[in-house]
Image (tube, rainbow, N blue to C red):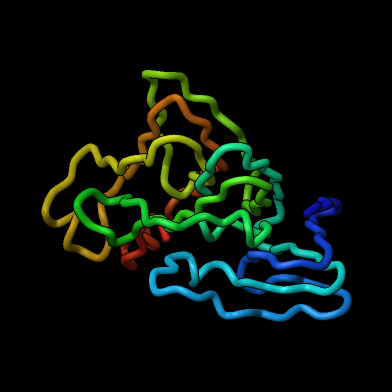
Length: 203
């Protein structure tokens, strides 16, 4: 299955695809959404199964930067940042705890093995290689994709109120352990008003 990226759009032909919500933006022929079967499909809220009979163009106006990632080895992508991928490339999905000791605010990550995935981000992405024995700390909202071990959430000071209060703890980080590759994008600063309203990092 082949994808072409041009003018901010990812174009695919007829086939069975995993697409982000609201995709495709335009298509020829037919594009039919199918029910994703299974009891524990953790990324169901972010990705649709779409069958197309002709060319389909995918793009998200709020996330205009597209990155094509070959999946020669298993790769985990933050589910809400997936734009399009062959349905056969998906292997599983998991929740990654951002706040230690709770799944509140956890990141949903889709695992792909083989073929490729196109991600859509609000900012440009960078690929960082982490060597054996090294670690890399990344803000949760800047995390896009990774290979290797599952990252762990970290907070310099975590009190019981950080776990219980709606605002969540500040200065959250995800720690990645080498050897691995990590794709990141620019992090957007949280406003004081957003924090006061109870908004937390993550999905």
